[in-house]
Length: 169
Image (cartoon, rainbow, N blue to C red; front, side, top):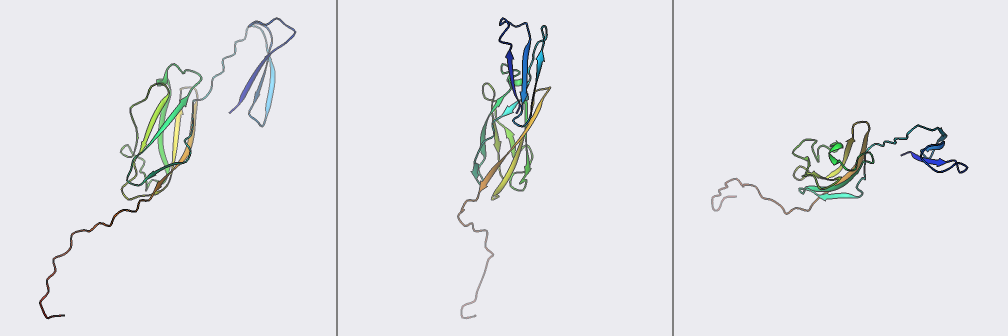
C-alpha cells in the first residue's frame, strides 16, 4: 500500500492554487516532485477488504464470515465494487462451487457475508481468495479457514440377516 503525502510551500499563501510538493512511498522506495498551478490531484485507490484472522468452523457446519470492504473512490455506492470468492486450496473439504461458496444477502454499506459449506465429514485447511474490482482497480487477497474434525457418534448401517442352528458351531 503506497502512502502519498502532499505538502504546500510554507512561503506561499495557503490556497488550492500554487505549487504543491508530493511524495509517494511504499515503505521501500519513495519519490517526490512538484505539481504546479492548475493541476488537480485525483488519487484513486484499489478497493480493500480486511482479511479475517483465525477462522475455523466444525465439520458439517457452514462457516459465515463477515467482511468489511473499503473503497475510498466511492464509499457512497457499495454496488460499485464487485466481490468474488473462490476456494484455491482444499477443494476436497470445500468444493469451489455455488452450493459450497456463496454470498448471503448484502448487508448495509460496504459489509458482506460469505458462507462456506464443507462436504459432510470433511475437515482440513482451506485457502480462500477474495477478488475485489471497482472498475479501474482490482485487488486479490487470500485467507485460510480451518475446518475442524468433530468426534461423531458411531453410526450403524443395516445389518445382514443372520441365522444359526442351535447346537451348531
